[in-house]
Image (cartoon, rainbow, N blue to C red; front, side, top):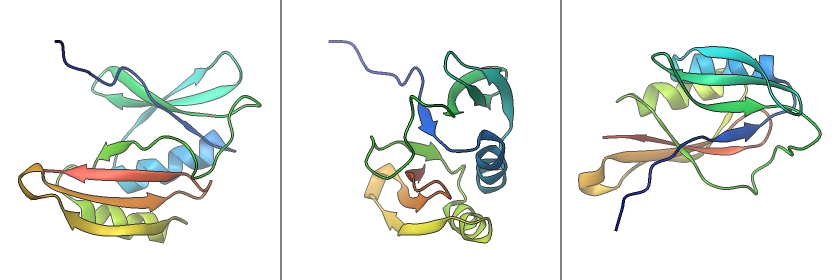
Length: 120
């Protein structure tokens, strides 16, 4: 049996520039601008690798009804939660211990997407 890796993720948004500013501030991360098959995208970078994106277009619908993803909070969930609220997001679930697997929390971004945060 082989393991499963996340190859790509997309967070649907109404305005990729605003969403990139929000996530850039919350996670202290950078993006690469892309033109996707159906509209503009901002790709999350891990070094030089693109690992997922913020997607805008008629094919995407922002909101809290999609799949759950957990983004790396890099050991600073409290800081991420604070920055999320300071930049137009909401805390949906406060920092919660998951024992030996670290801590998680959930935020709602300005587009209404529920997004998890995880750190060891």
